[in-house]
Image (cartoon, rainbow, N blue to C red; front, side):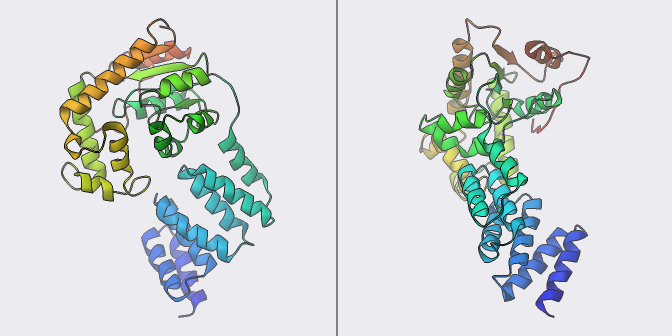
Length: 323
């Protein structure tokens, strides 16, 4: 079979939504012609559609190198790096595309999305992960607020560990509201409070610290997919934002002692200390902090009142449950 016929078959499978079959067919073309620009690009698209951005980006890189005249290759590479939270690389890609003659509104809009706008009041959910932060995100979206890209926040975990908040504050210019890492970590709320005065803060909590801890264990067991609580080696080899991200996150939070991995006392102490610290920081500013348990029946009403949103009987979304 000729390369074009094989490519046509892959494209037909792709257009029909048979992504696994299309991926195999594109890969078969690349096995024979590794520098085939269309096969590289389209395989990247298939992988991106399947949520495998870290695998897709390499194919987009090769396609852009082989076919710099293709605007589609540059667009895909820039958007993939953006979605991965690799914004510096995405901006470099846009510059390279423009140098190759691809100057258009789409790339300009993507650059603007990463640069954002200065000032403005924000909403920050600063509760620890597995306290209903995904439900809060859905509620905030229903109010018409734009949410910060979580992948970008998670890729700035190292900045948080160094207590370098410059790029985190930059992220805050790109949307109305934010949740999860690094906003769920200690110290971030002080930095964004100073950077964005008069913002609103939501501290999400669970019924008990033990309930939060058990939910965290179930969640990690589920996402790592070993059918048991992950080990340190499991976290080092698991690919989340990148291979080993979950282990790096553990080290940044608890240190390198593997004996502390999923240690009940250490985790619960960290959870309780974070909640106390947030509450103490805002103790003289009751209008700026809402402590909220999304499982309570009046949680949506309280959230609406806190943010000045009309309450019409809507219910709090309950998403990403593992409890």
